Length: 429
Ligand SMILES: Cc1cc2nc3c(=O)[nH]c(=O)nc-3n(C[C@H](O)[C@H](O)[C@H](O)COP(=O)(O)OP(=O)(O)OC[C@H]3O[C@@H](n4cnc5c(N)ncnc54)[C@H](O)[C@@H]3O)c2cc1C
Image (cartoon, rainbow, N blue to C red; front, side):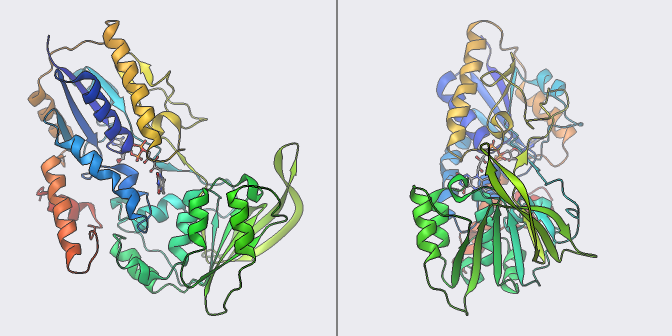
């Protein structure tokens, strides 16, 4: 029997867990190519997780062990898209698992959202994490007040990075351009807006508690009511009763308010909001409106998957339709591309195991078979389609160079902010 050859497209947590589960379940007669459009693996663990949460990034050490396996090749700079379609991949692999995440940012459909100074949380996170797509980003932080719209953990990450003393970010792996911009930031007050009541907020208790521990930052709570039980409500009540200092920066958590329009001529200078009330189990706008002065608005209202040419796509849910990870025999999906943008890094492990169970089932029933593809022919084909193809060795060179650059300043790594810098470090130039 010949070796089963799979492509896992997307080297984020879902791709890494899928590869590990394939190796664990299928053992010997298997080869996996882990493909990513970037020369760096680990998806949002590298480019989403906030730099002041280094312990979350340590999961990548587990992923690195999967990459060390001789049956696994990491091929960076390879993008599934118009130039490398699903049919192309199916011609060269027995099966393809898509773990491409939810790389598009959702934007609210309100007037003024396109004004300079109105940005998505994804854009902010890519900027502070040196994603190559943010290489040309120049955020104007010469403003007194910023507003973050949204009530999940990503909203709190954005608020924390904008409000916290930048000195505390100096020992992190935050992108250098972001560190300098934050060092010169004039922002003294960040307001976080939640449409729903505190008891309905999506952030986790740990993220909320952390806000109360930020040195030099006072937290104020503005909600119609803090009634209710649960750890987050206890913490909100405790934060609401803490004395502040006029010298401190300020973070305000406002509840039951929603944006209706971003205001400004050449750039943002205010956000119009409406108060909401609970009726029939839903939060509806009332006729009470308000204008909040601000020079920066960050919309942390979620993400969407992106269609892959040749694959079905559920436009309403923003993800690839599937049954327990199977799109069709030989084609599978895992992670945020499969479930939508919800859940922590670890949630993708269970999800990957379910997808790999679908692969095994198709092997058992004969719907999936090894066709004896040649590994080197596939590599030559991918190189031809993707001139900036990089390998595991390239990634390891980038990694070593970034870590070495951080040593003298006590930082975990100093990131290359541009794609050309990454490729040069990988040995591609
Ligand atoms: C801003 C932010 C902060 C977060 N912080 C935390 C946190 O602190 N703790 C936590 O547990 N979880 C956190 N999460 C959630 C966590 O990051 C996700 O659960 C997880 O990354 C989803 O994994 P994934 O592999 O499905 O997607 P991703 O991590 O997005 O990985 C997808 C990969 O696919 C690649 N790709 C995309 N399209 C293509 C294509 N067409 N061809 C080739 N490659 C492609 C991308 O480059 C990427 O490497 C955060 C999420 C965000 C957005």
